[in-house]
Length: 77
Image (cartoon, rainbow, N blue to C red):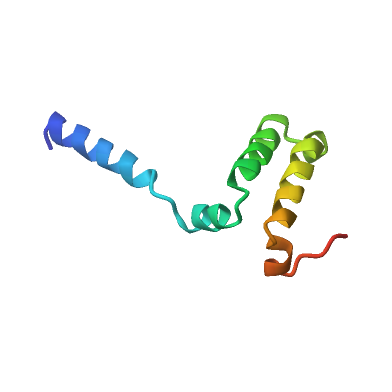
């Protein structure tokens, strides 16, 4: 394989990776993908959910506002 072919394959793999997978599609369908990303980023950076209470509450309000609690049968604890 030539260098040009390797570069083309690398670009193609990167483009394929940008396509939404099933997980992404499910998150986007909730209407709360941005809130989910912020919550996930917080946890990734802090490694402690307790530090991410603000992000969790914002995600929770979004989740309820979009009716996802009814759709998934989720109940508040």
